[in-house]
Image (cartoon, rainbow, N blue to C red):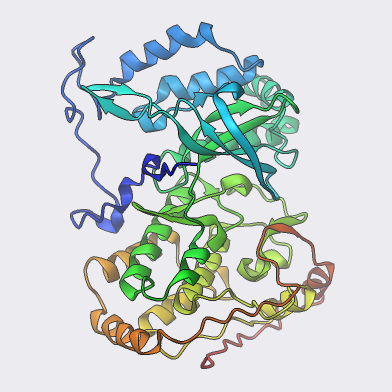
Length: 449
């Protein structure tokens, strides 16, 4: 399959120093001149009124087979303010070479080639489709209860009958919509559209495909590329993506290095399949990768934005060692209890003090003492662009070069699991109920590797 990572709009990684926290200035409305049809100004070759009319005129030419699904797509299309905010209906027969890839907590995953591609290319002043584009097909499973026509039909009812009993349905609808809109930011793996799998009649999200692998795979390939400059730039981009998720009133819920991808334009966050609304207080079992799960979640508390920040702290550690956290231990109830008791990965001696301080704040036992994603983004912006604490990172880079031949530990415990799975630890819950949490005293381990 050909590489089409260029289609992933990651404008936030252009590294503009003229904006705070990595947020690029919005393009001027007149950037692409005036619309030849109505004379109005356009936003990157996009005239919102005219494009909205085109979509409405084309509604009669396609259907998903469900009126509720059609209305869902119609709403997003007619409100799109740029070409990157469009959600396409993608007939399944326009997806070729479909191959199974994996199955996780979110549902089954396939890779395929979208014959048409998104309408993002500018040709002679007009937008045209990109052509063959590598994609990932993620089938919406029963966990979110939004993979069947019934879900969207219930949404239509919920829109006019906002009773207490229908609140979960409304919540899941806005959850899905927020996930899609969040992907339009460019900091998150793109969702191109929705399709329907004929064999199961389930709906699926068609998303961008990154064939270079995830962040951890990149970290293990070569020490030459994992410089401190690379780490700071990449972590700023990841923090920005996390901030975008939280701005949309979402938490990621399954945040680890396997869900971060590095493409030519920079780092982007993927797999929003377990994303949930911040106010979703469900805590009956959850999917995740144990070393990245915050202790309060292991104790049964619902996910929060600070849970994602804890996971970010683990990714910070992974960037310094190029190893997985707790890879030599079984990912079982004993590890869960130890994490709740204060166990954290060993911090290397060459880690800059300012970096170590932020990392320890991110994985603090108390969620209230952890920074927000916005604060983390601002700090990394200062380190990467404004060269704050520069001497610390220069010294760390010198040490890194001296130690770059150090072998990355390849040994993994046979029961160390780094794919998302259902995590249920009744023993941890029981320990919490008997006062285990209140008796906790931080045991931050600052050992030397």
